[in-house]
Image 1: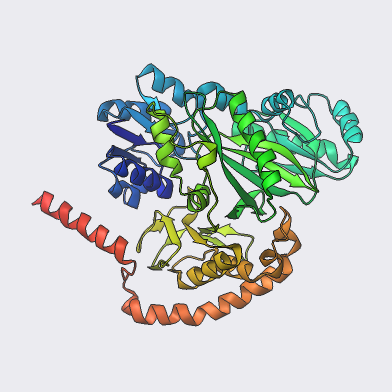
Image 2: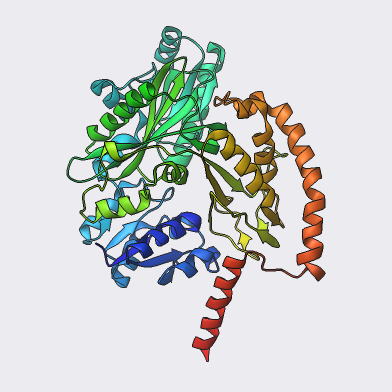
Length: 498
């Protein structure tokens, strides 16, 4: 096992990895930008080293700087979390050159699955179903027009190197095709440094279903069940649940086997996720994310498998502790991503200072968060406040538990997506699991009305909270666990100064 792990990330995922390391008796190193100097994750680590910049390219994306810090602090492994450098093959190369272990897959797996065209070609070879479309990037507009006619409209233009739905354009008529191709190419070049785009059939009203996989260095590969991620806006997930409400044992076996085949095809050796689109009884490979996912806690909830610990153990040379027969589903879990965004204003980010904070708790409730009362949510990073996860015996009970937890959750100072999640939990189509990736667009009027009602209902509760806990506009430390932890840290710092 490692002696010391540097976490090359921030926020709640950095804390999540640190917690796993603590249970494995492994020391941790946090790195932080100037903007994150007072962030909670820096207090959780055994050591915290400044990156001396708030510019992404000179902080969390500066591979050489991060490697140098790892060497200077004696870290023998780096965990990249998700986002940032988690799917950057250069990080793995420099780790190898400096005798540091990257807690993640090998370079060849990251590269093969990082390019959507290459990965799709590979899936075709091994017999994993893929969406009809181009096998090469678009080089000639006339050829693209011909292929679109052959496939049949609507089609979708995607960036080969991209992710997160950035730049995707759905085209319903040939007159729109050239403009869509040029737009996606320009955005892909600006965002990812690679303007390669490709065309494929647009599957209307699909469900987004993904399978968690785990693999070690000894050829053992398993899937850790499925998740439903169909509630999205602009191709970004908002709510996830496990297992998928439409999953049958026969379908799980087929899709799970495809996920394992995908992982084995690139000699995968870590935690990862194989994503599929599902429509009318058929499923299609979408992509493989070669990292831990934001929504991994719901899989942990229903299976009891600590995915981050398994990821660390595999990287240290240990074998998987589980076989496929060991993986069983216990109940149902839901995760709501609580962001500092305004759901009544197209989910525009609302960074700012948290002036009051009360987190939910109780049986079956998990909170993964990197904020605290008085913390300022930066405008330059992701707007996530917390991941709220509930686990219950079945889906109906999980929805009821999530409603209860959301009603306990109070954030003062910034607008959040809590009203959206409350409205969604009451939505009849959601409760009946009538889901697909266009859910929000198709239900937007009903959801907006419900959100407006929730905002009005919450106003009295929030005002009561303010008058009780925030007299004279003073910041009150309401989250007891965080408050006591921060107080202890500050006391220790004061002692050290004396």
